[in-house]
Image (cartoon, rainbow, N blue to C red; front, side):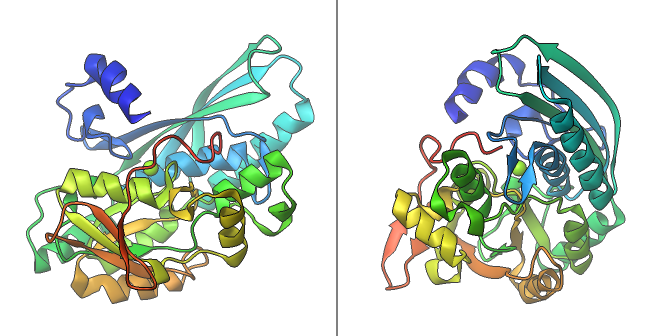
Length: 334
Ligand code: MG
């Protein structure tokens, strides 16, 4: 996917010169002070333990805007439905979109609906786009960072990480990918694993109020492995993470072992990866743990100048390089 985007899309569409452009390949773009993001969702099945395509669509866009430090304000909704798509399923999805919007305090303000002939897609595809604006919390957060070190960027970007920054994950990883996979394939462990899909903008504004956050990402496709490698590459730092600190639910761990999948490579839809100046790491962690979504948060590692890669320190003291996942161990989960 990275190769496809770089060689066939950026080649033609980069070069806008806006503040955070397409070629930054960050979670969202910034144009004249407005954060802009677009996502298409093709999850299969449309309804899965813990969520559905509607909740996923809203949360996905809201979270990509929030992790730049912006406040999401409005969404657009593009629905592509297959001819004969059950009206009760459509209603269930739109109701879920409404509920998730209420949770995130955003509104759908424009949209488009198309019907395509039977057999051209499996049920429905949803595109959500959204805009976000600068917030007081973001300004405050940046002031706190500057008490401890230099930071030129006006937004929370993948390229902002510096050696010494602590890395926090807001909770257990792998739940979403495994929940979708198991409900799709009918594995026996399906019932115990639920997707974490949730809008995180209110959690983000709480931790920005604490301050000191330099980088933030929702580790969706490619999981923690992909997100950490993007940070490492764009910030030009190495990242060391500690295996025993990474929260993984027991049933997810067992399912991953059975399927030969690394939970680090599995997508999440309700988790934050946070880079924070070391002086504020404990406070950000405490604030996260006071929220429903961040109860299991942990400091899992730190950025370093000692090496250039993402390195996992295993529980028994070994070290291994964590590469960007090749291919997708769990396709069609978002
Ligand atoms: Mg993202």
